[in-house]
Image (cartoon, rainbow, N blue to C red; front, side, top):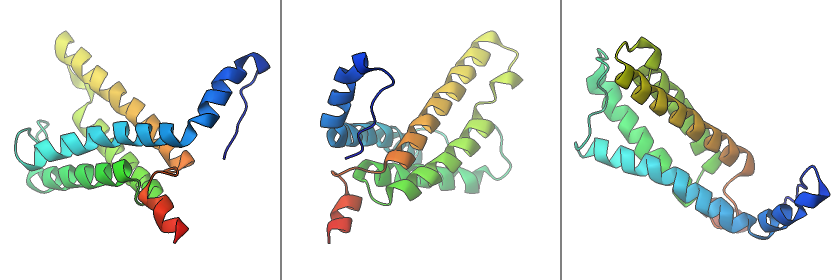
Length: 150
């Protein structure tokens, strides 16, 4: 168990909760993080949502590729299989998706600017979650852990 104390003894209750529930909370975090990719990748792959509205010249290739990476990477994170590799893959995906689809600084319309700015920083936050999953790993309740026990 990775028990990392907080910076102050008065925060020990939070330390105890985090350490006691670590494995379960890693599972919950993985499910929540993976779910956004699985949902988004699924609706793009079955044609409910467009891949991109930014006019990429090779949209016919990169759109389906991105949607497939999103779906497969999300499933891998959700199940905890190849979790650290999946986190790295999804970090790369997030960099590409964020800087190609949510360039808020290019919008003159204030509503579009704000919408794309929100999407941009949502992606930055998700990237932070992926970094944490990369560092922490999948946890006990994962296919990675099951394979390690064999």
